[in-house]
Image 1 (cartoon, rainbow, N blue to C red):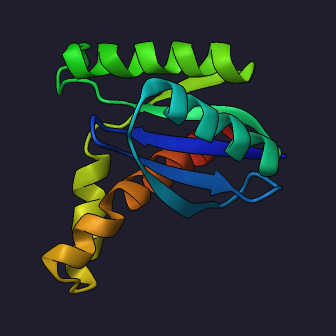
Image 2: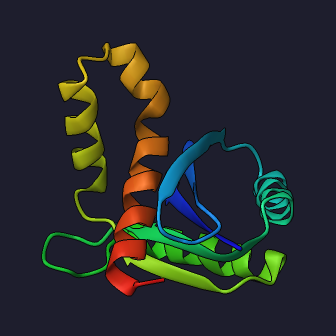
Length: 137
């Protein structure tokens, strides 16, 4: 059974999945958001199709650890996703995950347009891998 990692943004959501042994996170896709109902249905089907047992959402804390408006939005989305899918949910501190993903892509010498297409997915991979490494799942 797998764990899904999400990097939730206002326009796109990066998606990562663990391997069945829950050791390695891999990039899956990026969902361009439309309506809440469509987004929730997309994730429900994705979870069913990939035997997901847990969803991990990156929680964008402020640098001092406090929760700002974006973190509260992610928590609200998480609650709605949990209710819709019936799956357990975990939040993982994602401070600097997008920065780390951007650094990797810059080191790979990808153009700005190519980076934009994969940054959300790579941020989701970073969130999920950090969760897997940090919890011993």
